[in-house]
Image (cartoon, rainbow, N blue to C red; front, side, top):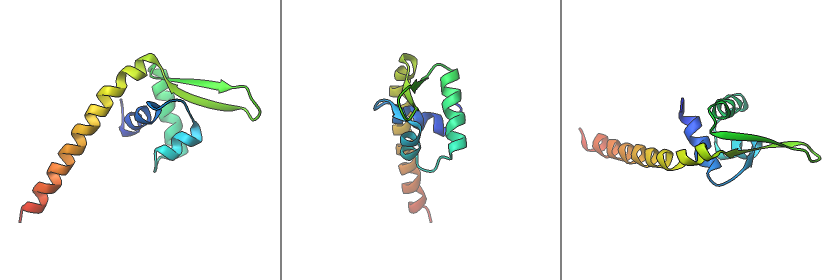
Length: 97
């Protein structure tokens, strides 16, 4: 995974399929351009499936592939580790004069 948005997108899609706008709302702070690039990269690497839903109005849903689902646990473990390190760093910074 090339950046934080890839990991966050995988985490958001772990709950199930999402439309582009729904995913963008889940990933607060991501621009449409960056989200598009992130989803394309994840799709190119076989982690995300893009499905065009032929309804009116036409829309696209994104979901994790089997490979993408296998990345969920390691991504969550990395997130937990990063959050604990951040908390430790904050505690250390506050206790250092």
